[in-house]
Length: 424
Ligand code: AMP
Image (cartoon, rainbow, N blue to C red; front, side, top):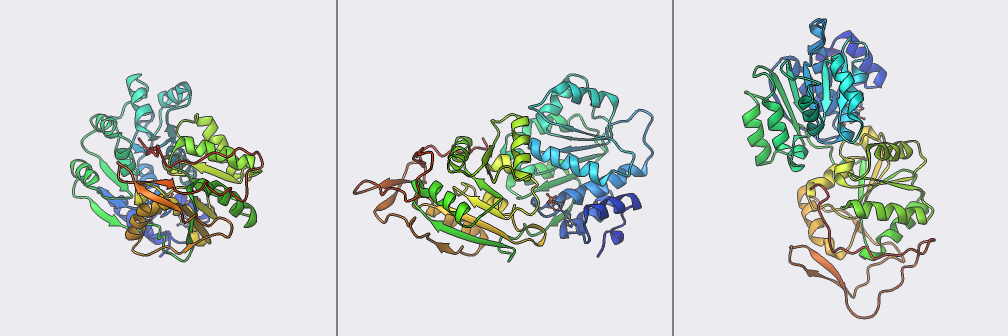
């Protein structure tokens, strides 16, 4: 199967070819004809499957079939949960649509509203937006959604997780009743099914296997290590194995900042990316990481959503995620498009239960190892804590000194206390 056989126009085929895509991915094979046919769609697909092109290509084709009105009107609305995802989807729209006379606007918060307002007032065909900022523009009278023909909810599960349901409902109420709806979600929880039920009319259902973490292209390994030694083991792995581009996940924004400082102290240029950072700081961190100025990007799950970093060789779970599905998202960042990837998880005794849940989801166990000099102290035991997780407690003599102290000597305990879900 080729892109030609999917029925895409010459302008889109040319742009796709320039992107270097030869064959459509499974989600594209199913989504492109379904969207071109004009009906609603409910697609279960994760980042890394090629889902963005799966909805963007047919959307552009449908819009380009009609001549652009003298005064441009918003004809397609793509809603995303995060700024990064909006930026990346917007980039795809620009790239795939570069031979079409369509205009798009990327709208998200955390940046000056005025240039966006000017662009919207001039008229655009496509808006790619996070819900909150779009509502601000509507209340300022910069844009009106009464002419939207196609609505896309991208990563709808994340939007619900992030509490956007009320904003989404407000926006839906401003759209015309007659329209095409495309819903993309990585998971199909009951909440998503309820949303889909209220939004979609006899949708075509598409499900593609998630970017398969069990695929040979991603090798997974768990290092058993005590919590307080994780950062030393991480520095050791990055240096001794000469990893050049590493995406590291922490659970909290604070943890991301701290780890990035510690790694930098160890002589490994690092940056943190999370929701508390300004948009310009996030963009700079991502650019520095992409162009090799920073070797490590430390991110929380939500900040990493939608980050499109091609051919990422290493992903590290500094802490396992509370939600097993996030593990699949995280390691889906590596081993893309046939490239070899390595996903390493640093797991302390407190996290046994989380590891167990992840392995149950994967339906396989992940190989485990210890690193010489960083083996867990057998006297450290996990104890249940009130919220059901466990808290590492040391019994017996004082902890052994880590064998690779930081150069800056700034050694802090990485307590498992106070783990929060950074998404809320
Ligand atoms: P997505 O799942 O939309 O985030 O896409 C993941 C990555 O796959 C992006 O870097 C795309 O540029 C890339 N991609 C999308 N479609 C194809 C294709 N047919 N062939 C090769 N790469 C693709």
